[in-house]
Amino acid sequence: MVIVVRGRRLLALALALFAALWLAVRWGEPFVAMVASSAVGRLVPIYKVDRQEKWVSISFDATWGVDHTDRLLDILDRYGVKTTFFLAGYWVEKYPEYVRKIAERGHEIGNHSYEHPHMNSLSKEAIRADLLRNHELLVELTGTRPVLFRPPFGEYSNKVIEVASDLGYFTIQWSIDSLDWKDVSADFMVNRVMERIGPGDIVLFHNAGKHTPEAVERLIPMLQAEGYRIVPISELIYKENYVIESHSGVQRRIGGREEASGE
Image 1 (cartoon, one colour):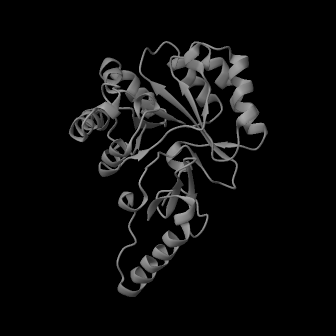
Image 2 (cartoon, helix red, strand yellow; image 1 turned 120 degrees about the vertical axis):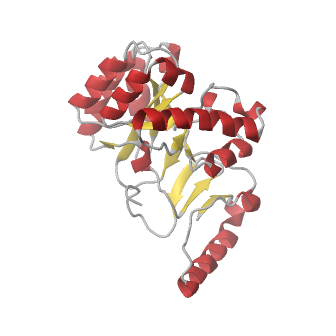
């Protein structure tokens, strides 16, 4: 069961969850994942995951250019790291060879919309059409169905998250913005990330950031030296039996701390 919780409703939701579990055991019904939007009001994406293990994710948004993409892929290969790339549909159509290359190198690909619009201003039907247009492109080029969606500009609303959920997507934000899109120095990015990093964090980069490859090349060994394991976002998050705190966007496990991968 997937629930977004407010503090005062936690007890009631916990009791409801217990009842649902009892019914599932009693009647043998599958305990399926769902978004209880009618009970909780405001929906939020996953910004960070509550984990005791020192797992983190590095993600790259691709909306313009490919100038530094090959270097990034080589760096990631060198350190044996797999990450998540969120690709915009118009970028996918312009650089299909890079979509295949990213997938062939073992990285996860997420949907970053087709047009990269301000989705809050669109109807549910328009949001759905945009996401499906890019979804179909990604499936055609990679043979794999994407399950992660990152809203353009980090903008979201209940209708955006609901449409994405209906299409089978987990909506993903980030907990640490490298600010590479501002053309800040590699030193700035390295310091910014290392000062903030903790288990379950999701770091935002862009594949075309001017100083991003240098920053990533320095960050990976630093993180690994501190015992962090860098994983794709789909391995970091919980796939079922979780809550997302509405005030923080932190995803927490209900009833145990089993690994997210393979759920």
